[in-house]
Amino acid sequence: MKHNKRLLIYSAVIAGIAAGPAKADKPDSISISGNKPGSSMHAEITGIADAIDKKFGTKIRAIPVGNAVGRAVALKNGKTKIWMSCSAYYTAFEGIGDFAAQKWGPQDIRVLMLANRRNNFSLATSKKSPINTVADIKGKRMAWVVGNSGINMQTEAYLSHGGLTLDDVELVKFPGYVASLRGVISGQTDAVMAANSSSATREIAASPGGLKWININHANKDGWKEVQRRAPFVAPLVITGGPGLKDGEKAEVGSYPCPTFVAYSNASVNDVYWLTKMIVESWDIYKDSIKTAPYWQVDEALKSRFAVPYHDGAVKYFKEIGKWTDDMEKQQQRLLKRTKVLQSAFAKAKSSYSGDPKEFAAYWNKEKAAALKAAGF
Image (cartoon, rainbow, N blue to C red):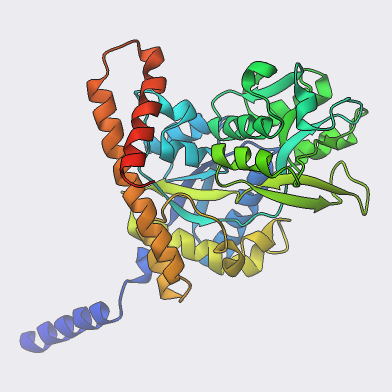
């Protein structure tokens, strides 16, 4: 009898192994740092979280943090497992902007999934403003978001389209993205980076001053070359309608894949696999609850230009459903090589530098450029 019981237990164990990972492998909850209410990203994470809870029973704890550096800190300290970002994750990966400091450097982060957004994210002003082109911003007040190097990098990139640098404008600092948008309404700033999908952008459009998109002329090829040299993930976009535009009106602007879910490379493969799976497979539920849902549909999302490598857990899922392509693998390997170059170069720069900490970023940027050039990037 005891022999038979042992045989039954052994058989059950073998059957469980053969069946693959148990359903219990699905995490009960996942914490994600993201934007505060009032941003389009907050609306997205709320809609996606509700859908995941309904379909999979996993609780997504969306933790709103005021700026990108704060969200990166939450990820680094383990307060959250995932960071929902727009562009700052790229500056973290590259170790530029706020992340060029000795205490940061290039972060070993990975992408789970990107929304292939077709919404505008570029320069805006009030309809009452005399600003129409980028060159018109010269001498005017330009919003600068403290702790958000992703937005600030694009600010500098778009200014270059009009032949301007940060020295040509008066920077007005704001504690967060939403605050910067509302700075247009209060008259604190003349120009700001804005998304036409953001509720705070609609606030500007509904205000007495109204909203006007600053023309990022697509015919100016040299200007766009400068934009993409500084922010390689940005691309020209024509928008019709929406905040600041009457029906049928068009505006030549720019955009990039956003939002993006990212994690550190050493994050649990299982957690990342499941979150990626849940975002994809709960789409039928949230597709009618968030305006940006079409950009999250898996086939559309995977068209995104990715400049940071995917996490192993995400790659595992996309291979499982037959969506991982040879071109994606080629880009993945290229970016993994870039990761090693960046990490090695920063370690050397940090150990060899003995000057003023405030001057380290300039030193690191030179060392980084040399290392990437030597590696063929």
